[in-house]
Length: 468
Picture 1 (cartoon, rainbow, N blue to C red):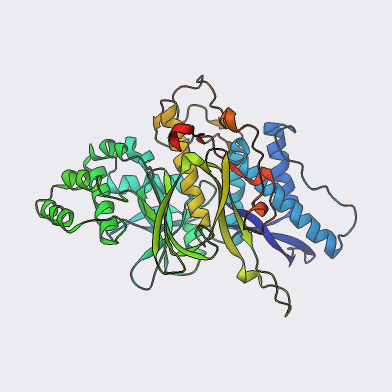
Picture 2 (cartoon, helix red, strand yellow):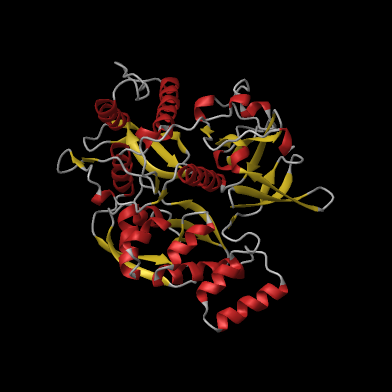
């Protein structure tokens, strides 16, 4: 997720005195508004739990009132601090950090804790209304939906909740997968638009997991509804003969056979994104990006109007990063913050010993990054003999109670390995150990980046002469 603190505000406290508030944005959307003292309190909790060697350095206190330039400097340091915490595997997934963000989100949006009805949409347009608390986190809401649909407990880890935005033509675009640090009801209502909805979809990439889901009636129905929807939206490539066969299976209500035939089709299980811009093979090319089958698929419209298709395997991506950039001013004044755009850049192994940066400019860059990370996680788990496991914080034997108001829990991933003693997997092939980590500024992107902001890819694989 992309954390930023793009601006500060001067607010009045209950006592009437002014103070500086920092607006924390997630994916470019306001998540919460916090004070320096609150962030310092979070830092102290993390430091006490994990130690000074793990937790990043926190911007120091000042004895006197800050000047405007010092306020801006502190904002930049706090933004870097929050990004560093979130990107750390232990800190970013800790209950200390996530509960702080959930609590701050609820306080900022001024939504009291009360029982409400929340609509969760299914792929076929139907919806399930669940009774939840406004303070329920993502996992709680997912469990409530599963109970409403009678989805078996062992299949809960195969599905996730996604925030989507409806389009004018009946289509929709993915905003993000709902995370553990947010409250779904607060997230969707704070956007103040009926165009935003929460949808339930499968959260894995490997079609072989479909067999597990199809063993249960509700799992089969959910997977069938999603498959039909994706085909109707044109996300799956179907020939006339294949379409005839699918319709025949639909008429017979042969859901399992329908899915098994769909598995053989091109782009089955892919997520399709809105048209955007890429610098590959040329700068400024229009592209439709799809994620699936452990790759990003590009359908690029070249300047001569020809369409060129290609795929970038996640195992050939050495690293990637999401950045936000503001176009340079043309001399008429300062650039407008509203003009900021998101970019996903990844370094790809094009051929032996040749790495190249490829950049995608898209409002859905965050979602693309989430897809890449989940593909890597799934690959690594399968490589180590793991399997999809249900994500339930409440049932963990390692639950540690700190107080009535705070629980310190290490939230397990959806994809987990049963063998904790397995050998660590080397991050990079040894034959590429001499290749330095180049910044995106060395490619066609103008962003100034540092190595600590990258998502390193532990599934990265080198290629030999036989592969060229």
